[in-house]
Image (cartoon, rainbow, N blue to C red):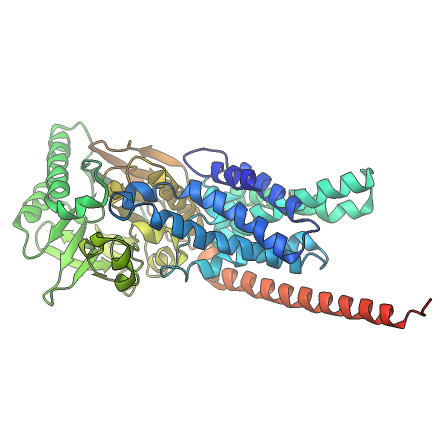
Length: 505
């Protein structure tokens, strides 16, 4: 089972091995066949623990220097419990026909409470995030990340049922193979059928966007105490970009983007004013902003070359241990470094689409890419282009940046919008509405991207359904678990009654 968990991990970016995910779930389902509740929970937990320990290894680059391995180990353990519960509940519904359908519903439904708990929710590693390309990705435009995840797991569980049935019957034409074959093939066929509906053309013109990646030394969360390093590197790279624009080497942008917390703004900032004015175009500046009441916010500010800062979007989903410390009093008992982490105030979702450069630009920041709500807010408020400022300088040279970029590619398809990923140290990227990366930077390099992106107004079915897809899958899973529990109770009761009524003898 641990091998299946590692196989599932290998399906995630930076590897283009999306097809490994359904194979991993097929192995998971085969191991669960015939297991009792306790064994199913244990095998599910092992599957999850092997997956999260490998997929979240980058947390050591982020927090290991100050907190040791405990955040990585503790979070992996807590998240693996969801997989253990999944194994338990899949056993509950295993007698319902058709079992693969109910099992897939249960597993994907458990991703919903993962957005709530632990640490205020940690949806990293959702099934859909293993699919930034391939047959299933287009389904994001229909039902978002929940539908993509459901399709992947259903394919794996259907394949497991097919293999088990073939092993049992040895007859390829057995009618009982119909459902397993359908569950194995239909999700991928449906995904391939939806691909022609994915629109990429501009519907309200296009925009030339420049995003600046200033770079920083690889010192993890210690960069919090060296805000000027990020600021100065982004000013320097912006100056180089401006020189290229003036020389005609690159196109003049319509919009300039700086990444998440590329600078700290505690008062008026004439340096940023001069930089934006020199470009002569509006900008979206990612900044740690200190308000008059002394409270800090993680903001993306619309910056006009003449009038300066205007409307701002404030990050809603904050990074545990990076932007706030859960249960700070308890954490202080584990590490003396806990008080080095500031408390940043979360936003409420207003201004998720900023009026800038003659259009509406939807913004969601870094960690928020893993949550469905912020990107949906940005499109609901009229965003024709999505911008994702991110400060990946904290997370070292590991896989976190690539995993996050994969999520942004899924969001592009989910909402039918081009996405600009603006990172402090990489990976910055321009992503087309079909999830294709049109240009990108490397990790820990100073660079800038300039490219033309389409502005789109059409909403996808996923936009129109909103959270109903997720809650619908959750309701079906709850109904399945209830039905499975009732069926097991009645079966056990009937068995007990038959045994009691047998003649002695």
